[in-house]
Length: 438
Length: 95
Image (cartoon, each protein chain N blue to C red):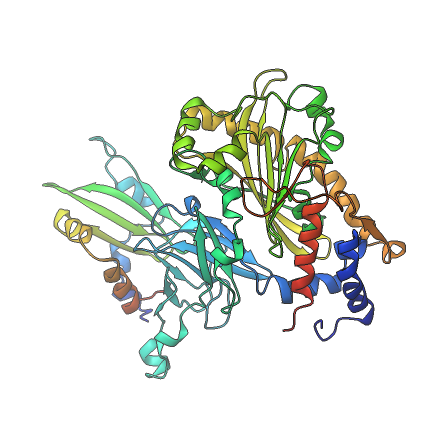
């Protein structure tokens, strides 16, 4: 059932978890454990579609960024003909890393070890001492960089290590409807505003992915300053209102917080709202116009949040959007990428205001970010403690809650916003991957 | 492929360290030098006036090579396919 080398204890825990999740129980141990980390690397991240980059990070020919799937370093580059390519960041000669910079622009990559040169699309073209040394025995066509399968949705570039994986479209399974609130802000869509914030955190990636699958529950407590000081247009009295939606068996989930009496599309500039009325479907407009906060995760580890936030307490909020990648680098340890997404067609003034609101809240110095990571790091530490190894956490909120029959969007929707419904689907899907036959 | 410096331009063409920038005329509205660099190479580009015209000087300090291109050569570069540069690197990948 699980990989060779997985202990009986972990195999039993995962077997018990199958029924446990349905009953609302998740073992703490999964949030900080070497064997779980190894299984995730080998069975989850080796087959899922994983986020690599936003197309607007590589707008010009030769632009590249270096990203990861599990422990694989990957160059994502726009080649000299404008096509997007992803290749392992490794010279085929002796395995040296090709790009040491996180981002740059190059028509060709040249290895710093023996000098093999590749087109930025990955073909090997230059070999020092080719005639004198190899004497016709090296077929350059066979020794290009190793290609990674990629596909895109609305500017997002995903990659998978599994040649047999279903299409990205099938993988997203209808979640595109909700992703559009982040990716189609206005007629021209969304773009990144500057490079991402990037740092290491002593936190398990899954805690973050779960939180961003719609944890509205923590907001009035962990981020109470936002409520009390007038930064955040919600109140404890009504904060539970809204919807939680997930795509069954796919793991994707979103929380849609609603504030009673808030004007439709509050926090967006008027001209952007007009554009969205033309570029979004009637069903999307019905859902998004009522949404104060949209906090969602694409399984496994890409998340988004959009919400209004006041730059000065008490003033009307500015709507900002963050996209974040929780990249595991060890049990209870991750690398964090956080981007600010802005509507491409918005005014520079609005983009700057949205970026300020993003920076005030997210990124390594952001108030919300610090609130969250303080908690998440302690959760991670607890999950790795010996006395916690056999402890379960309760995931029973909304266990009996009926599915909304008339919700305009796809997926399994419930109300109110505050519920564990999305998380149970997340953990069931995670379990599907970890217990799948190789 | 070819590591012989004589094929890249002879040492005699090179001013002593640091002297090259002094050679570049600074009057007449010359802008530069401009450094074009990525993690694989770095070059210094300047506009160089001759008695009767102007050339673009491309200097690779790390490699110790230099070329001065006139308008016809630069014009020619402007309509090359990317593959042309790939072929140049194929012939002399450098190191």
